[in-house]
Image 1 (cartoon, helix red, strand yellow):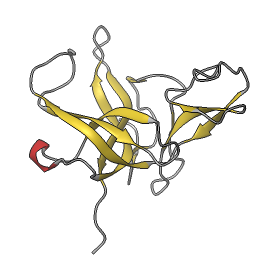
Image 2 (cartoon, rainbow, N blue to C red; image 1 turned 30 degrees about the horizontal axis):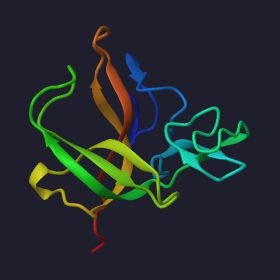
Image 3 (cartoon, rainbow, N blue to C red; image 1 turned 30 degrees about the vertical axis):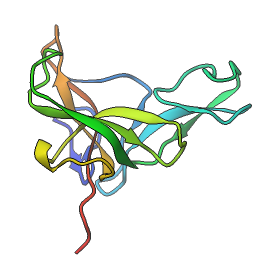
Image 4 (cartoon, rainbow, N blue to C red; image 1 turned 90 degrees about the vertical axis):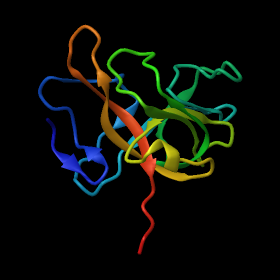
Length: 154
């Protein structure tokens, strides 16, 4: 298992595999925040996640990779109680998170560190890096992104 920080894993451990290459940046220290990587069109400014090699809005081919904010708000959610994807334990919360980088950008994610009955629309969440499932054929832990409720400062 990889080293842990305040926002989950700091990298891949032995026997772990990434959910998908090129979608997140691991922290380089335990207190550093991870970030999702998106593409931004230099022509129209549209932001896409996961990143694309061309713009889906204006079809421009001049895109740059940018880090997204690691915070957002829950736009919508559901509690999954029946296994749809092997390797993901149920129940879990599947949410759509709206990030401040683009008012039209919505990210599908699992919600961690929270009981399903405590999730609400508008809840502030932050990204962490964690196990998202077990590999279907490899049996290895698949490491990716999740969001969790922002802890209130006391």
